[in-house]
Amino acid sequence: TPTQDIVLGIAYLTRAAPGAKGEGKVFVRECDAVLAYESGAVDVHAPVKLYVGGELVDTTVGRIIFHDSLPPEVALSRVNNEMNGDDLRDLVAWAFKHLGHDKMVELLDDLKNVGFKYASLAGISIAMDDMHIPDEKQELIELAREQVG
Image: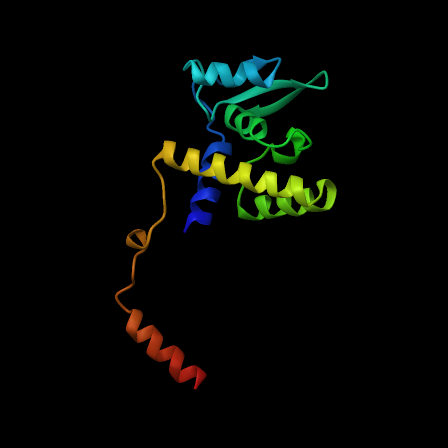
């Protein structure tokens, strides 16, 4: 489904891959990390360090890109992990509670855009054809019907 593709794209973007090209680089600003990625100097999954409020923070280039795509009120610390569906749900709930309806809608639009973009760039998507149907499906259905009814 489209929602799964969004979550998949964001999970792909925010995962870390130790040993990736550019690991250990230090960036002063988010835009420097994004530029390094766009120029091919670092991999999107590279663990790097970023100065935030005068302190060095461990993160990845992808998490910086993800954070950079969100409203400015969302702190990097709120999204500085490999984001899954539960994390995204929590982020949206936080935005509604702390930023209000309009900013939450803006956040949802940002999540949709970045999720689809990176699902496409990664070449990953989930479709019905990707699902394996077990040989014993019919047998399991009949067993469940007997137990229920």
